[in-house]
Image (cartoon, rainbow, N blue to C red; front, side, top):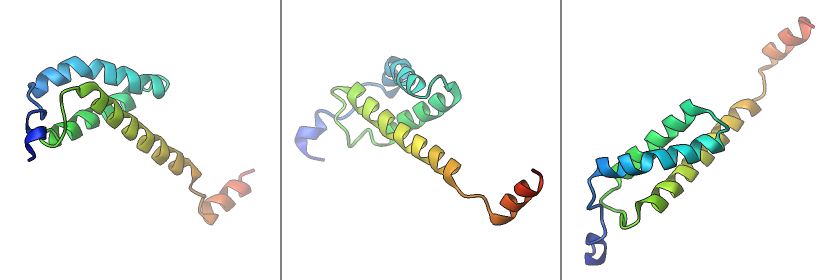
Length: 102
């Protein structure tokens, strides 16, 4: 690892980072998901798990911007996947069954 990054890698205890920043990251996700607490918790845990896995490669001098960026990226991925699930066309058989019941 380059010397200039070595000094800035995570020196804080990961538990302290989690305790300090879980609530702000969760609130950000919760507000963007219009109160969907379950999805916000799931995404938040994914953010912290990913960041913990990458802790040796990141500059942790300011952890909140890193966590906020990862939370935003995960939120966008989640919303895109959710939207794609609703866009899938019905199979022709399901469509015909639906039409027949009208």
